[in-house]
Length: 116
Image: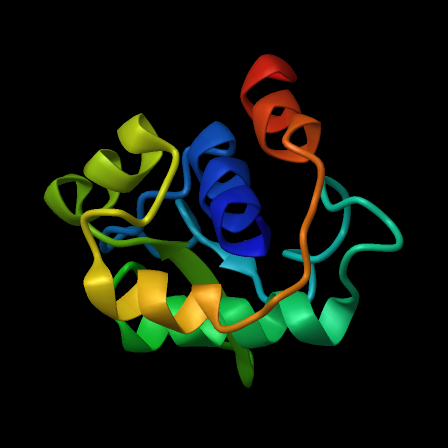
């Protein structure tokens, strides 16, 4: 749920990376602000998941003023995940995220696409 919410949040903010100096990236510290249900995740978990997505090539980062900014990777990598609303196409990430046994209501996944 956290990973999909991160991707959806960056998609809604049009954070697709690129080489522009001040565009298309979100400060790491802003990523956990808003859009994540209280009681199901915390700031540290959100940033940990973002880091895992970056290591898997789903997110990209760039340093700025000694801090990290996140953006979505290329559309061929990210769009299939967004379209399917799952990590079925990414066995590495699916297995990693399925290790967490915490269940969440399906509305927490559906609502993030309806809130746009």
